[in-house]
Amino acid sequence: MTKILLIAIAFAAVFWLLRNHRRRADRAAQPPPDAPAEDMVACAHCGVHLPRGESLISEARHFCSQEHEQEFRR
Ligand SMILES: [Zn+2]
Image 1 (cartoon, rainbow, N blue to C red):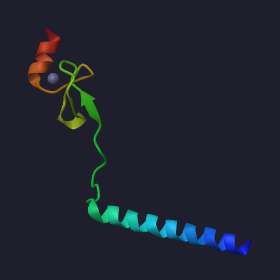
Image 2: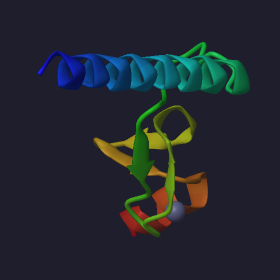
Image 3: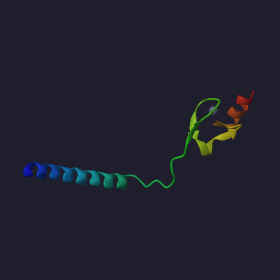
Image 4: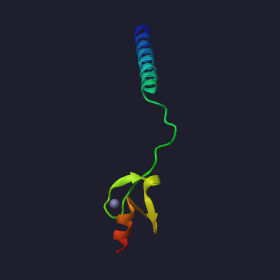
């Protein structure tokens, strides 16, 4: 019984070490995100997705460009 417990603990320790190592490797590989990911919005005219900050907002709708905003109004 003690043997089984020791084996289980050893497996848990190995698993924990591997997980920590992988996390550290992932963190080293990726640059830390400075800003949270920006919401994506769809153009009300053509449906293309773009970051909210780059979209034109008109009457609570998002557009990818001035042309699409004008075409949508027509
Ligand atoms: Zn568009």
